[in-house]
Length: 258
Image (cartoon, rainbow, N blue to C red):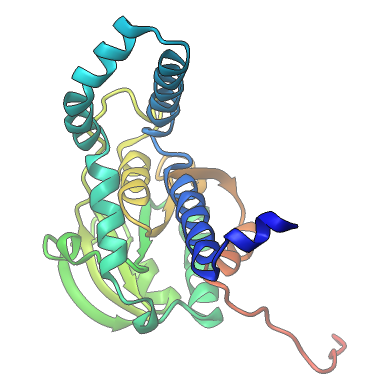
């Protein structure tokens, strides 16, 4: 146990902080397009360390001289992730007002209606990262969220039915918002523009996006660079409550149906 004496409490704190940062970084890149790139870079770094240990001088020389170029390449490849990460750090989580149970229930009610009638929709919930830049291209509403309002907005041939709705807390802040498509032409191949735009928003920000297909009425959920398709109303409600941490409804007693 003598080795414990060489550790200060500051060393333990530093190790825990460093481990937490690495853990959060792996969670951040999970499911993103740069995940495979990052693993490839780890393999190259491991190969470089082996070259140093076994005194492969030529390979070590190449690694050292290309180090500056690699740093620039990393900044270019991980530019979207760096921007997203810095934006998250800059947000104050104590000012957040996540959707409550009533907001989730009203949203699911509207989504079920839209799905049955095959009305396309994109509903984006703002979280830590602001979506103001997307709101500026749409129509500002700042209205109390309700299932009737969402159903009205996405009714075909109405002025606001195209584009996305952006929600802050229990407010519908903007409608008819245009979301950019992924720059990569091959990503989400086989999916429509609505799903690709929603996936891109969920990948570039921490927004939670609900999508209803106009062609099939299929319900999907995009979050943290992933997309789940083929959800029903019950599953969608459960997933939203899990993500936002909304409490489940309960009753002190059950009422019998007559």
